[in-house]
Length: 581
Image (cartoon, rainbow, N blue to C red; front, side):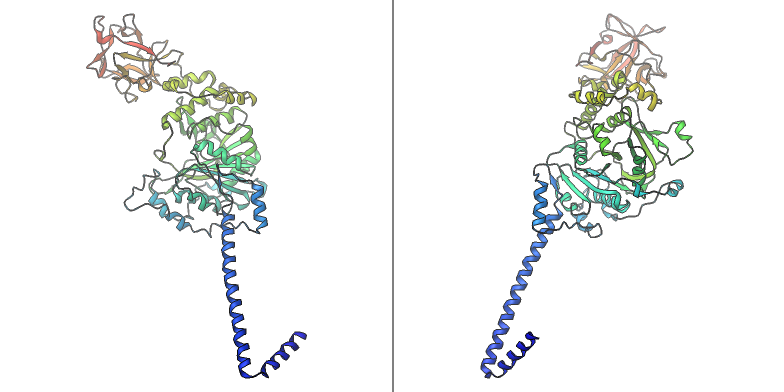
């Protein structure tokens, strides 16, 4: 009321003034209003800019680097003091098209060159694309109880991954998982050339990005992601996957039943040429021969006869890229061997360790995840991919195979020449965990792996004549023996003359061709009858009834059987022991 009376009295007084004074008062009032409005607009723009910068800082709060680490408490304190709010984007708010186009192929660029899969096809596919639910009817009928399962941290390591495949991996996790079961998605950028990929993805809800400023490889990157994880369960995925319907619930349900189970989904195939999603068989498991190279193999007769086809499938070895494990079990089990380099052989080592140290490895038929399988790696390995794999594998062999390691060296004699580093801490871990011996693994877990009967402790040799060495060349069954310049690397020139007289390379033995009694070929040791003797004068002589035939250098390219002649220099051979070189 007082305010209203004052306004009325002021207005009456102004109206009683002469016109020129009333005009002056009106102009002054308009000027004051104009100045006030300008001030408000300018202040508003500055405030908007401040808020925008605060949001950007908040969105990139989780983007970590190895070299620039800050005190988390100070960061949180700063956000609270400046009243910043961590404002993450949902996947529906994220501009996926703009994100992908930044890594698009240039006109005329080879679609396979960067990633060894068809990037053009991947870039053209919707991020939220529909894929067929390839589970069995029995799996579809199962009812899951997410409220009973513990949440997981998803860990994805990537190095120069195509933007579209990486984003589709993340999106498939978000789209096809109960949100309460995904604590976080940790992307470990292993020193990709384009650091902005991680920076841009770090604004997504639940996504945390860690960047290695130097290349560490998949093994160490996964460990770094695991160290950063806050959920009780870790789930490792590759960076070119697509999770299918209800993929996560079976994994977490099984771990709830058995905390020491390490569980893997059925790995479906995403075609590298056109990105079609293709269902894989649920009647296979992981396996290997004595060269310790992973392979898919059929289930055992006992497994095939099981009545409930939704139940876990025990597997001697996992492919390695996709699995879930309790974080405390992963830690107490020794994580990964950090002295392994880049990639390769780590799946073998963790498989042996899980089984032999009182855990289980399982494939769950009702969990399906697609994976892009490539013919070769698009990135380089420091020291060369083959040497890295052999070094990593030999570390596993020296720790876990006990006396059975001789069968690996019989299959891969060149591994004897590889420096595998110090394994004392891994042997100490084996003792600490009171792990079972490899003989237990063969008897209990993988009785289908046949122990060769033709392998003994004979040294690995090269058979030499001057600068030429006997060479298995292709190393394939039925192919002829030949001669090649000695390269001192073992490989196809590495042979073993066993105590029984077999001249062996891996699981093949030197034999006499059925087509020609002079031609020497490599056949399976289990099917050959040919045995050889090295005579005192340097000849390699066929044992038995045809002992008058010896190896002979023919035109410096071929090795054939000819009538023994002690005066023929082409029949004189030197055996050089390379086992300890």
